[in-house]
Length: 103
Image (cartoon, rainbow, N blue to C red; front, side, top):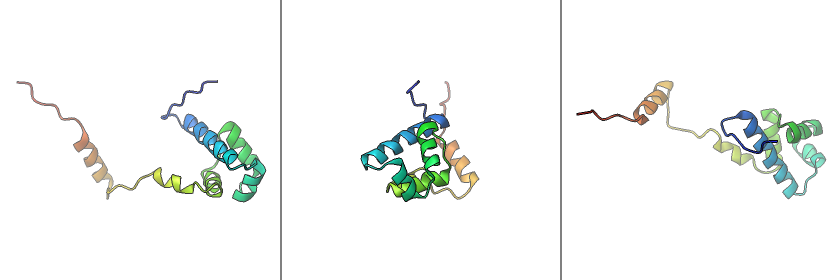
């Protein structure tokens, strides 16, 4: 099994999230059964996440809340001062490298 994480690959990111969640669960000395009960997520969904890395966003957030790590999710989509799509496009254009003239 390849342990290299490709941060541009959703499956790799899901795997890393599942591994981290399991590590946190174990560090808090919680069984899958206890975490499932505390979070309101079915035991089957939790087991599936820890083994196949598949889970709904709602259930992932419920697990994070039960583990007291929900605040970490606020960093996923940072708020920018963009007001419209045009602002985003213009910001990106101004950040692009400008070439100097050849003389």
